[in-house]
Length: 421
Image (cartoon, rainbow, N blue to C red; front, side, top):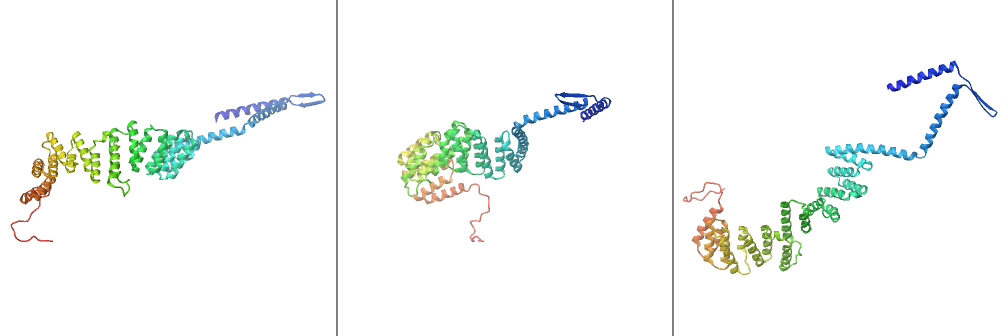
């Protein structure tokens, strides 16, 4: 403001000084050329010269600008649009951070075509659409991002797959991830998302084929990976019969079950839960004779009370050899109640009734259980020892009734019948 006032003061001063000089002496100028003469005052000539210079300078500038008017206009418009896009991007990112999804999608989507980093805008807008439950808009924004940034196809596909997984569109998620896995087979995030997707789809066969890559590239912590492996093969064993046609016979079903068991990695071949699942299905299909050596080998490798109990329930191909195999375990487990119970059952299969009674009684002596009492009572009843059966039943009831609350009982000496509600 001060500079303008100073400039105005100078102009007025110079104008007053020139006006005074013009009044004092206007001067005289004569220009003659050939037969033409021009007469004027000095001051008028000076004014004409200044005006002519200004007009010439203006004309030259206009001529220079006229050569590229559209380029400059376009550059100006681009700069203006870029600044606007930058402001909208900033507003959109702030709204995204605040959880204002509608505003974030609006600002980021509007600014994306002119943004310096359009990928951020498109992915941010897609996230905002996803949070609003607008799956269609989210997918469209991913497609726009893919068209604008083809070099970032992996990042865009990962973002889209993550959102498809979140909204439960597992089939679409798989379709997005499988081509991506072909392009980036070592990408840990691709493998992690595909693992989640296959698990949700219940495609355990495909997941079993993915497990080696998950282990090789350390996609999951060791403990979690081992848990996933166990569940995967447990599900495969359970489902091995579901895929069979209804008219398939037991031999065909056993073949399919054994084929599935052969796919179980050797490090899981001794997993107790998987072995129990395999043996249970063998028994259901009439393959007890095949289950016996599997259990025997596993017990020899690693002792397990639950597997020993199961071993005593099986009818192997040779009952005598099965009993002799179990007897060998007494050397290392002489006081084990589960082994003694199993030996009692195996003795019954060999019709060694006296030895069976001894084993059951030894099992009860070391750890009373309703199961051992039931086996002993059943055997004694068939041997006609009814009095001992009553004693064993009473003892078994006391064992199975442990933990019952203390309640008043009727007097057995009274003859009157109990009242009924």
